[in-house]
Length: 385
Ligand SMILES: *Cc1c(COP(=O)(O)O)cnc(C)c1O
Image: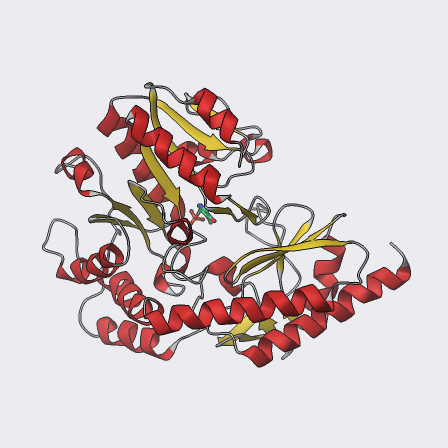
């Protein structure tokens, strides 16, 4: 009997060890991990430099209240702001908390209530971020939700044009919708959102919780479309598995978060900052990001050629190492088979197989993964589903 709430549909695999791209389950079976904690372990499992940084901090001090000076946070904030259009950072512990901070600062800064988000988006599970999430299944049973959220179709320039006015506090979006199906935003649509925010004095918030920290081959995914958001939120990959989140904002927002307005007991703790600093120092190197783009190109080409004749595969989409294989049917039976063959992958919506290898994945490991995907999917094609 389990004493856990059954709020997760867990697979029947128990991982007991991980190193790099490889994990081992309790029966000694080895897998290639192309989930990486859902875009968390961007440097693979137990990256040596991050492990060393955490170990060193363990021998100094674990927790210091935010009532004290925080040079441990300054170093990470410097890296995040130097590699983005942001100027100031607030640290928290998760993606939902980072988005919660963004929603709060947007309302207080503009004095407005309404926030536009998009269908199929995912922004978290707290009341504000659950409400921001444009998916009914996430809301179901929890109403009444927070007021004044407006959900628009994604990639629809006309819809945002019609909905914008000077009552809107913010537009919040993912540059590639992760949970919602690996749906990339089109450059023209993303630019239109930003222009309309500028025109009406609304804040442009980009949720980079899944796409940030090198995942798409740039430090942040918004940089592919040359955008300039007022707020960027990050979490997942930031600490290589150590829980940490951050809201990064432009200078004009500084005075809105004056002393006492917002906070977090654990936000920016020395251990989390040690993990984040060591993570960013590696990922934000131009050469490292260049390699992510090369691996992505290789992976995409391989997938497109090798899966070409599988009848139920519609397309391969995504950016960097956030990729999705879109099928024309429910993919959950495929996932179990792929796991059995030794490759861990997950879904994004009902019809997309999502691939999130560590950014440190080797070309050889990509080859192995593609072979497993091909063989597993072919076995279903033969049965004639
Ligand atoms: C995972 C995710 C979140 C929520 O992050 P948590 O750390 O689970 O709270 C928010 N936004 C996006 C885009 C995500 O992928």
